[in-house]
Image (cartoon, rainbow, N blue to C red; front, side, top):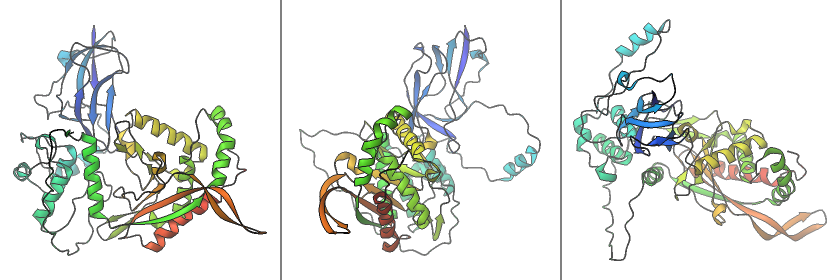
Length: 449
């Protein structure tokens, strides 16, 4: 019998480590090919690690809640394969912070990079703490120059007293004496904006006391719900939200989709929904009004070159996730349809890769899927705007014709755009949502796909 080293797989260009949430298999369990062995979490998404080989799980090298580097050996599987490595040849970490060394070939010219790296200041080491800190919390602490002794004094509001992102951001704010927000480690923008004097924050109001009666049920938030809660509170505290509304006549789109959907499904093997149509109109409107596709960095406005549209998707657990369609303006309607269906399907199956939830520059959410006619969505930071599309309803509407105005039954839909009033004024916000509606109303009912 041979032994196979199960590695923590690469999960995207910007993801270097992950936290082990749960071992689905235990030592001694049999594993089939592509069967899930463990569940892991990054700061963006939870996912499962399948086994590329069949066999028996001999040993796990890390415990739950351990933070593991990508490429590290995490388990040993006994298999019939001939090309596996013996277990006694594997360097097992002495403790949960040490990782298996990865052998690399020497690349010509890499000596200069190594010298430059040696001259860089060493990152803070938080491995001596007895407390668990997530990769995101460690990254913020390192960037803000927070020592281990300071980090250990922070009172955590998370599960089992863990320090959350919001806890450390509040600590940074109190330490600096202003409302400066720590830079998020996955942001590609270096936080070098000019310092702006700001007023000291008002004392935080104490949390309301919640009374609990004997028949009430107390439900602890899961990890994803805590992340969503922190992100939503942070967004409202960061951006002054304004929402503009437009009602669009989408009768031509409804009739067109009804005409083509059966043939499209037979030809492409995919169902065509309204979502890719809305995203196509969004991408066109962003190209017309690119200042809606921005982020704020201090006093700087970062105008995004790429149009990466996130689509909010509800999960079976009731939580929310936002997979991103990269370069949406470069895809035709068939490509958008396949991307939308694939991301939505894998989101429901918890099979998204971390990179597929990153890099969004604008977000759309479909509140109409719940029967709502409109909504006022919260901006998905660090973006500057988010569009909500409501339910399509039949309504009597006035139509202008060459013979005069007539009343007819039309398919109508509300669009609502929430935007960051620091950088998007009512003129731009209102013009943008009107532009999206114009593209939808101008849909060619004879369009071929």
